[in-house]
Every structure is written in C-alpha cells, then in structure tokens.
Amino acid sequence: MEQNLNDKPLSNMQIARYIESLRKEMNFDDEVYGLVKSDLEDGLTQEQTEKYLDKNFNIGQMRVLSEGLHKGIPEELFNILHNNKLSGNQMKVSLEFYEKGVPVETIQEAVARGEKPVVMRRLYEEVLAQLSKAAEQYTQDSEYVKELIAQMEMVVEKINYQEERYDALNKKLSDVEVLKEDKEVTERLVKENEDKDGIISHQQDELNKASSTIARLRDSIEHKDKEMERMRDRIESLEDKIMSAASDDQKVAEKEEKAGPSEVLAATDNKETVKTLADSQAVPPMYNGIPVYYQIPVTDSAGRVIQHLPVERTERKSNGGIAALFARLSFKKKSRADIVKLVASGDLVPAQLVQIKSAIEKGLTEGQLVELINNNVSAEKMKEIIEIAVLENSMAG
Image (cartoon, rainbow, N blue to C red; front, side, top):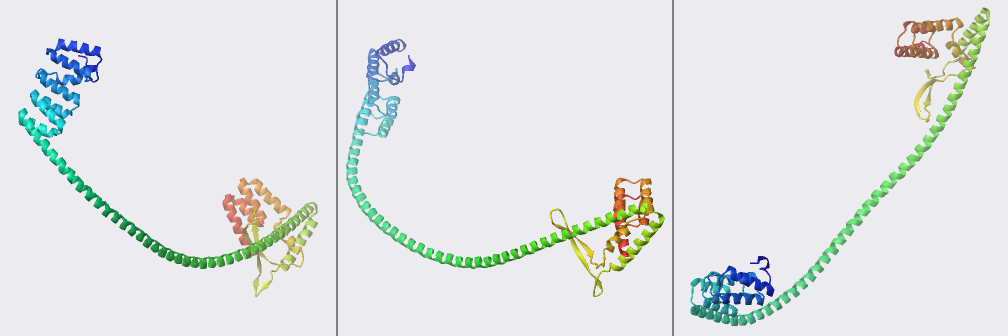
C-alpha cells in the first residue's frame, strides 16, 4: 500500500489503485471494499480507513467505527469502541448516547462492566435524565449565583468607594507630613546657611590677612632683589679693582726682571714698606671690643643666593691695602723660578697641577708650596692640605 499518501485524501485514480491493491493483499467481503471506497471518496484518509480494517471486525462493527470517524469523535472514545471487543449494537448504542451528551467516562464504565446493549441503553438514559435535572438545577443555581454576584459587585463598589476616600485622606495626610518635613528641612537649611556664612566670613578675613602678608612679603622680596643687585654690582666693581691691581703688580714684576739688583732691592724695600703701612692701616673697627664683619651674598646665574661670605669691614686711609695684598701673594723672581722648576721636574698629574695653581691663588707661602710639591700627594689630599694651610695662615695673620 502507498504509505506516503496515508495522511491526506486520495484522488479517484489513487482510490482505485488502492482498492485494487487492497483486494490483492487482504481478503475481505465486497461490502468492506465498498465501505472503504465510499469513505475515501467522502474525504477520509487512507490512514483513517486502515483503523477499522481488521479481520476481527464484521461489516457492522466497521460501519459504526466508520461513522465515528465521519463524526470526528475523540480518539479516546474511538479506542474504547475499537479495543474492547464490543458488538456492533454495543458500539452503536455507545456512539448514539455519546452524541446525546453521555460523558466518555460513563461509556468507559459501562463498557468495562460488559453490559448488554439493552442495559447500556437504559443506563445511558438514566445518566441523561440525571444530567437534565442537574442542568435545570444549574439554571436555578445560576440565577441565584447571578444575584449573589450582583450583590457582591455592589458591596465591592462600596468598598472601592471607601478605599478611594481613604486613599484621598491618606494623600492629604501625606501632604501635611511633607509640608511639615519641608518646613523642618527649610529651617535646618537656613541655620546651616547662617553657620556657613559665618565660616565664609571668617575665611574671607583670613584670606584678606594672607593677601596682605603676601603683598608685604612681595615688597620685601623686591627690596631684597634690589639690594642683591646692588651687592652684585659692588662685587663686580671690587673684582675689577682687584684685577686692575693684579695687572699693576704684573707690570711691576716685569720691570723688576729688567732692572738691576739694586733696583730689585729698592723695590723689595718699597714693598715691605707698603706692606707695613697696609698692615698698620687695615684695622677693623671695634664695637665694644669686638671686630665688626659683614656677610656678602654669593648668587648663581639665576640670581638665587647660594652662600654668604664673611667680609671684614676695614677702614683704610689709602689704596695701599690692595697693593699690600698682592705684594703678599706675589713671589720674587728667583722664588717663582724655583717653584716652576720644582713643578716641571716633578711627576705631577694634571689634577695635582690644578691644586698647585689653587694653592698659589690662595696665598700659600713658598715653603708650604715646596712641601706640597715634594711630598707628591694625591690631588684629593692636596685639596685638603691647601684648605688647612689657608686656615693656618689666616689664624697666624
């Protein structure tokens, strides 16, 4: 048989082929083939007709099952009629009273007890009678229920009305509470603002004081900057004078080299005289027996003060003090030659030579320089020794 066409109606040609194949495969009476052909032509599917094609069913049972399929009975009822070995009359009575309103459960109970068709009919009629009375009672009860529902709706309506009133009252109470809270919040905010105004006023006073202090400090800084500029100019002027004096001493030294021994001796005596005069005139002023000194600020390229040098304030009657200073720092021709000879003959490194130059610039004596060169100590030690010698000379002088 054509299984792919079981679930939909067949055309006339397909029906004819199906009946022909059915005759070859299964041995039924012509009435069965006629029933199947009629059902297929009415629109039943091949699958539906195969449900009642059973060797155990006679044509009467098949007709009842076919009728049930035509009327679209539930599958549960079809299975009850098909699977319980009912006679054609039992099937017919059950299907009849199902159409009249007997529940499938009642039919299942009657079939399970194996009742005869007559008993089944009477049982089904009693069930129908009870259902009729129940329907009448249901109608009466329905009216009563409707009345109760109407009364309940009225009660519910009144309740809803009362709830609306309660809601409105609660809303008013809430509004009152909100207004009260808003008033309290407003009062609290006003108080907080007053406190903040006091704090702001105090902070403004402090800010004004700070601004005044800043202005005063700015003026002081500007004054100090001007004073530092003046001191820098003063230092530059002093440096120019020192360089000029050094140049003069260099010229004097060159003249001494060209002059004879008597002239050198006279120049030496003159220098000693200048030194004596300078020493006698360079006396720092005293205040209650204490020498008076000044602090000269030393600045970097950006104008920041990096060190203060103590400077002795002396009153000199003439410019002889500067000449005396360079006279003390200068050596005779023979002494300079000896120092140069020592340096040239020694095995000194450039760093040591730099320290020897620094020692000469800082005014170390000829003897101190000779000892420094002959000992041939490291440049680091030379630097420390030079500092000690400078300190010793200052204390001795």
